[in-house]
Amino acid sequence: MHTGRLIATLMLILLGGACGDDAGPPTMVLPGQLNILRQRVGGPPLEQYTGSFWAVKGTSRTLEIDYVSLEPDGTGEDFLRVDVPSDALLLRSDGQPFE
Image (cartoon, rainbow, N blue to C red; front, top):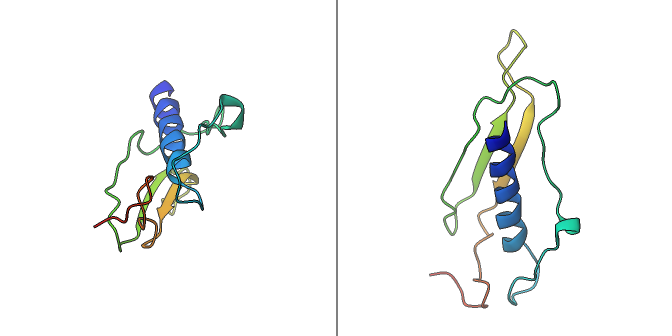
């Protein structure tokens, strides 16, 4: 359970630093400004505790981590979903375009 929290925290920090409307260098995010994602206490386990993907310019990507399903249809409740749209990789943090 601690591994899942650590991974979720790291993902939020990385994604928070990569998101923004300005093309300037990323700004420091203070601990009080972070939204920490935690598993529900007493909830079902997660289907997986790690996940990764390659963000590719011009291609949308999605990462999902769900709770283990307790329903007969096999669908687990969402825990984490990260959507990276196809136009997300336009400029680097220094303002230079991705090739």
